[in-house]
Length: 287
Image (cartoon, rainbow, N blue to C red):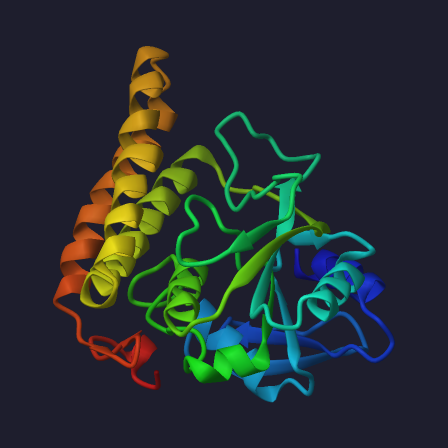
């Protein structure tokens, strides 16, 4: 997947763009299959640790993120750059992500944001704001909030919600974002049904911790996010799954709800300093 991803990113990138691959403590280490890519190695795992490494070593002020299971459009980088130039006061831009054409979506997709219309994103925004799998953030905005919280996301203590936590903290610092559908990409949903159930538990776990963090600093937003987690992403979907006797979908919803509760409790007992979770395990000691 990495080789395929790099082929498409390299085709989309301009001649002056910098391509950085961050190896999140994989074994054996990653070797990027392109002469343009600079490889940085993290000795400890964590998607947000990798993202922090990437933006801190990058040479430019616009930092675009993509995951290795994402395929970007040939105009992806240009669309992000053009939109960032047109909106100089906007801190971040989430891109449009559709299901990959070859994906078997019988059990649902993940990390999809396929709305056709652009939208302003701010502290009052609800629902899906976009994903870190296709995202542009200004370096100054990342620096202002201390970057990504390394306790969040895959490989971190709280396993998911890395971008939604980032958005929460950007909004709290007075920044705004924008959803930009012209920056197109596709996500290859490669997980089997059992893996999707485990993934939904992790999604709930991370989102529960995120809600616990919001309770400390922004209770109105915490209530909105909790309502979406319990109703919009939970009970509203559980009923149809049960009526249709779709065991996989019902198990996914139940796993997400259970994970949200556990994550909230864990997050409530984890200290927060300057917007970042601190302590608890090695994945967050350097936050």
